[in-house]
Image: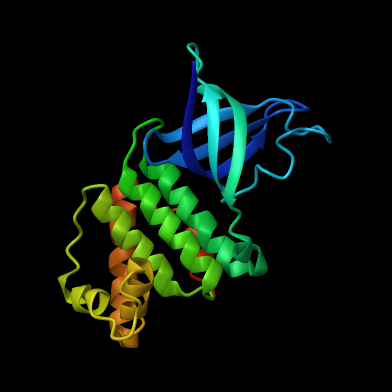
Length: 213
């Protein structure tokens, strides 16, 4: 039976000489893995449609024997082209993908995480990379996962940014954190590093690169 959903590509890897494994983050199915048969062939119908952080509508046939489902059709909705204009943007997006991989189980949907990643990627395509974007993603991820970090001392900065667009909550939080003093920002960085380390048992090494602007 064919299923349809939408998602963002977190990772791709070769499976055979002609096929790819594509890992998606979806709002309704969580992280799922699909096999794009023939995707590496020059005349594949998947050509130009399967790249990191592409947002797409897609269909697949669910496997009864494994977590690898057969990808049928892909319609790209947003290629997030702006991410490829700056290595710093890609580093931050890649770190976000690693956090999602390490903090969730396959096919365990948390719709807030898909929304968070969508907001974060949209922000990165428009704005230069900034360490505040990493902090906002980490804070929102921890809250969505139920860790409820105590960040009362930073709450006002996140919620009252001054001139941020009200309809863009990610940008609102980023602008709010940008108003913190250097000492406050350093304290937030240390707090988040400890919190991520506790939640994931180890801080991913990609974090340092994401914060190197």
